[in-house]
Amino acid sequence: MRKNNLICLGIESTAHTFGCGIIDSKGKIYANVTDAYTTEKGGIHPTEAKKHHENVKDKVIQKALNIANLKLKDIDMVSFSQGPGIAPCLLVGMRKAKELSKEINVPLVGVNHCIAHLEIGKLMTKAKDPVLLYASGANTQVIAYDGGKYRVFGETLDQGVGNFIDHFARYIGLGFPGGPKIEKIALNGSKYIELPYVVKGMDVSFSGILTNLKQKFDSGKFSKEDLAHSLQETIFAMLVEVSERAMAHCGKEELVLGGGVACNKRLQEMCRIMCRERGAKFFVPPNEVLVDNGLMIGWLGILQQNKKEKDIDIHPYERTDDIVVEWER
Ligand code: ATP
Ligand code: FE2
Image (cartoon, rainbow, N blue to C red; front, side, top):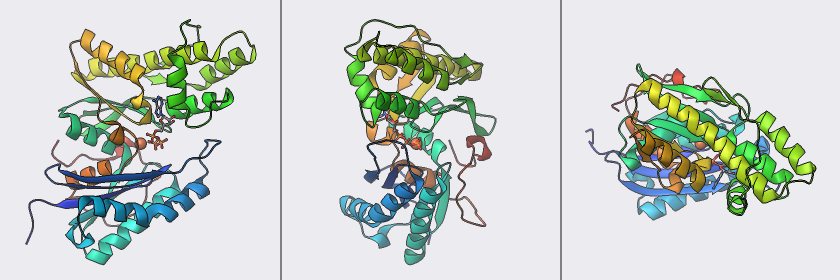
């Protein structure tokens, strides 16, 4: 007999983080456990990240079940991040998800990581039809629902905003992850140093700004604090500009944030001001679902519970608009 309230166990493993979340059809959250691979140097090494995920996967899942006070047999379905992401990392999550679903004989669903950020944002903030500014390590996209699909209205033409910040932070000796460290020292910077502002149509680009920042740092004429402050003011203005244009173009009146960089209070403040000025609503989900997590994968699994798949596989290069939205939004 089919239950009307399913409990889904979601597995995330696209990049640094191995995560397991447990959530039901009503949106009740039972657990959300993550374990992230970090390195002093910061750059992600696929084989090392895969090893990390192999090492922590059973522990993370068991911890989530313990927190949820559930046994594996209480789980009604399993979902996992199918892509986009790093193939060796994705494989760890998919294999574990397959193993679990076989063991307890429940359905298995593969879901898109970027759309999961958007759907968990909607669930947690009660936004109805938002534009998502998804700003993480590897990804920088402005996404909204339009004509039956989630579409990317603007994105980075080179690296993700988080990787760009981490790169500069490492260059000036702040270590990894750089985002929170740049945010902290930027509070002590007051002088705005002009930097290139690179918005091309609806897209953004960071590599020229990175070169410029490195040259300015090497010249010895500017303090780290002023450079951090100017970096934030410039690149966040770029992100806010493309988000606002997407809202205007799609006629949407809500903005939701996603991705680790969205933990940044100055970015949140700039988005809040933009939304207030155009009479739109602004939502920031809690930090634990801004960063990569299994809960959002579990929730999108619930939404896509009727998805029919012939072959369960990973899709490292999957695009947001490859997905046909067949679930109720
Ligand atoms: P993906 O790109 O696949 O979503 P990821 O592991 O690269 O995954 P997240 O977990 O979403 O990304 O976020 C990590 C990034 O967020 C890092 O680049 C980190 O520096 C950045 N970050 C975290 N906190 C802050 C902050 N307060 N300000 C700016 N950046 C931050
Ligand atoms: Fe992510």
